[in-house]
Structure formats: structure tokens, C-alpha cells
Length: 610
Ligand code: ADP
Ligand code: MG
Image (cartoon, rainbow, N blue to C red; front, side, top):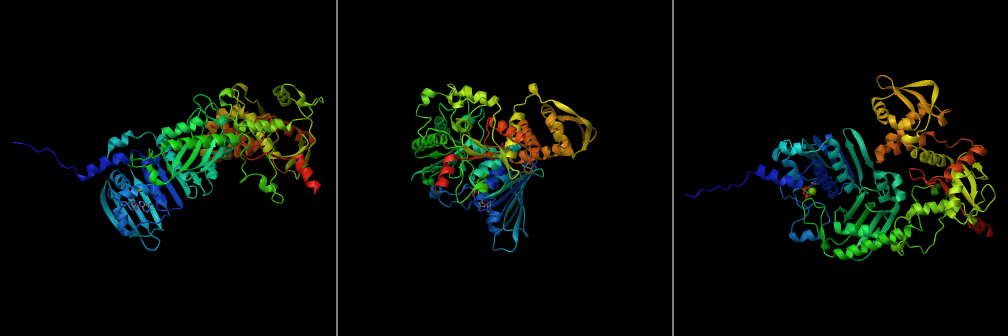
């Protein structure tokens, strides 16, 4: 007798299997919930996680909310409000469309939903665990939707055991968060992890969003990219060749605001940098492509980072040429931050004075001779522009012995000499804030605080364990009580502090003793400075991922530099000017703020011709 052995899987097993496609880790839940909130038109989205999302993922949005019926329906498989027929797949403007995410999440966790539409007085509260509907009731809740996802994989031990440690899982979450936050810079996003606010991204421009995610110093590494054809729009930023790094960090490609991975288009981007960056170096990019959804097939992978286009070749060619052009342009026109820059203080009659001028060849195109110039001896990019900037400051300048520096046959040699020479500048102080001087007949105004901060920063940055700054013992060692947090931070940074000249010792519970400080700091309050340094350090870690030593150098420079309001004598001013011109990047502070401005002689002459 034949024996039937096929049976339909029980729903909860089928659901768990299907969920595996969508929910691999906490970050997958975060991605789906964030996407739903964006699709729901929210302009304020708050994500709260505990234990890297393993015990809690809570998402609060102020989007359009759900009706009582929809609130219950949304957990059903293939329940979506975003498409209703197959053709809709070719005109998608939403991130979701499969109606699978919430069903999958509910299959492998304990979920609570609170949601209310604007015209309703009360909202809906739904509880569902491992696909099992527990309850639906009315509740008080603001317009919008809140999802609480607890104990992910509580019913699948094996999946839970596959999760990595909290640090790794949280990194995945932050990655997903960035992929949504970057293209939606008009939305206010907050990320709170174990009670600490990690990210708070106010609505603003793309560059502002990039700066709040990766630090304001990032801006000087980037150039804008822009192209608009009837077929494809390209916008965003790419990094200058000389800022290429050894790791693939900050590489983002979006199509219609959806993060994608596409090796073919990646190749186009790298092709644009060919000959400009070294072997195994990687550019940063934030590229936004927009095209009619009918040319895109996103229906290829459930997690949807891989997509297909109808005309990949044209996209490739356009992307390549647009980036090349942007890099070419950048070499002659450094991108300046006019949004946040010093200019607002210096705008007179609509005229924005120039930053120190780049002496450039307007016809220069790094791609013309790309093959012959090669990477090693071609600096390219803003670094070069910057260097030319300050090199040009000296053109025609007399050195201390009265020789015209420009007449040196070997310009590089001249610059080396200049870097080691103390030059005589005519200086005076303006409003206890600026040092006014002249470079090559042009008028130059230097921000005293920022200039000093920059040169200290570079000085500290170049300090390594081999050439540590010597510490001068304090006459009266200072004992300081700290919060547990700060105490741990100091413990963690002890060696770094030591290298930079601070002699710090632990002294019982949450207490330290400062035995010595860098000799330069002898006349300022060491305790106050140390507290300031810790504050700045912590602030920097919130809004940017800066390496520890770099961060500490910034913090120390910021807290030990001379401040506005300090009356400077001639010798001090000359010292500051001499220090700043010897910097590798004298034009900006570590956080990307302008350090000096230049008014060209011919501008002055033009004015008096009136
Ligand atoms: P999809 O996003 O593919 O449609 P989901 O399972 O993610 O599928 O969501 C199902 C449906 O639930 C959505 O189509 C939407 O109508 C509704 N929904 C989900 N999240 C929200 C939210 N945050 N605000 C309003 N409606 C939502
Ligand atoms: Mg969805």
C-alpha cells in the first residue's frame, strides 16, 4: 500500500523559515522598521536599542500611522499597502513592497505596536509573540507608529547563538541606520543605545548630514558631483584622490534613495580614480542616482541591496565621466564651506572675500596626462591646492636675509628653507581676536585661536611614543575626583596622555593625581584643562568616528590654545604666524573651520578706483 508522507508545514514553522530570509540579525529588523517609517512619511524617527538590539529594538515615528484594521493586518504575510498589482513593481517609490517584513519580525520575537492616525482620538495597541496574536486594545499614543521588538529569536535558540557580540551587532545596526539617514537628510533621526544617545541628526543639507555622521573634517576631503540628464540624475560627493585610505569606509551608492551594492558601478567609480590613487587605496563616496523606476528591477533579492538596470552601460559611462570631471574641477577650485564658514562674519555688501588664493593653471586637468604623471609624483586634489595655497602666500616674499624666495631655482628647496626659517612679519592685533598681517602684498587676517589650535594639533599629532613630549613635574601634584565614566576614560587613555606629556596616576576609587603636565601648560589650570579635554574628547566621539590619538590631540589642542580676548604682544603674534604657515594644512582647523582669510591687493586697488 502506498504511504503518503507529504504534509503542509504548520504556519508557525513556515513563518519561521520565511523569516530567516528577512531577519538575520537585529540590524535587519532595524532596517525594515526604519524603511517603514520613511515610507509612512515620518519626519522624526527615533530608534532605541538595548544590548545591540538583542533584547530591545524600539522605533518611534511621527508618520501617518495605521487604522485599527491595518494595525492588525500589517503582521500578515504579503500584507502591504504599497503595491496592489504586478505592474506597480515598475513604478515603485517606496522602500518596502513585499509585505513580508513585519510578519517575519513577529515570527521570531515579541512585538508590540502602538499606532494612531491623525484624525483618530485613540490609537491601537497590539501584542504579538512568535506569530501568535495576543491582544488588541485601544491606547493613548501620539500620531504615528511605535514598534517595540523584544527578545529577538526568543523562540529559535540556534539563531540566537549565531549572533555576534554586541559590538559587532551594533556596528551592523549603525551601518543600516546610516544607509537610511544619508538619503533622507530632511528627517530628524536619533539613535539611543543602552541609554546613551549615539546619534542625533538634525534635518539639513546632505553635507551637513555627512558632517554629523562622519565629522566636520570630512568636508574638506570631498567634492560635489552633479549631473542631470533626462535618463539619469547624479548628485552627491566623492573624496579627493589624496585622501584615499586603505579601507573601504564611507562608500555609499544609492539609487532612488535606496542603498545598493553594484560591483559594475563600483568599477566605474574606481576607474575615475585610476592613476590618481595608489594600489589598494579606496576613495570615499556618497553618490545618489535617480532614474525612472521603470528602468530598475529591484525584485531580485529579498534584502534588496542588489538591483538590476535596463541600461547599465550608460549609467557606467555617465558615472565615470561625472566623477572625473568633478575631480578635475576640484583641483583648481577647493570646495569651501560657505554655509558654516567665517564668511558670515566677513561679508560686506554681499561680497564674500576669498580664502587665500590658489595659484593654479585653469587648464589643469589631472586626467589629460594621467598616464604619464602616475600616482607617486602627482599629488592632485585639495591637498595639492592647499599646499599651493600657502606656498603661493610666500611668492615674492623676502626671507630673513633679503633674498627673493621665488628666485630660488629649486622651489621645493625654498619651501623647505621657509618652513625652517623664522620670518619677520608685520603684525597687529584686531579686536583681541585676529592677527592682521600681509603675505606677498595681500592682506591676511588670521584667527588667533584657530591658528594656534591648528598648530598645536599638528604638533601633538606628530608626537608618537618614540618622541613623546616631556612632562614637567608640578610643584603641587593635583588630586582630582572624577565621575566613574571619566575615570574609566582616563584609564583607557593613560598611555596616550603620557605620550603627550601628562603624568597621571590612579589614586583610589574614581580619583587621579596629576603629577606633571606638558611644559607649555605650566601657567594654566591643569585640572580645568584636563576636564575640558575629556569633555571635548567625549563630544568628538558622539558626532564623529575619530581615532583615539587623533581625538585626544584635537581635544588637547582645543583646550590649551590661546583664546579670543587674549592680548598678544608682537613676539607672540609673530610666533603664531610662523607656526601656522609651517603647518601641513594651515587653512583649516581639525574640525574644518577656516583659519585665515586673504584680501588680494587688486581687490583693495579696485575699491579705491571708485
Ligand atoms: P511592506 O513595507 O513591504 O509593505 P511591511 O511588512 O514592512 O511590508 O509592512 C506592512 C504594512 O504595514 C506596510 O505596507 C504599511 O502599510 C504598514 N506599516 C508598517 N510600518 C508602518 C509605519 N511605521 N507607519 C505606518 N504604516 C506602517
Ligand atoms: Mg516594510
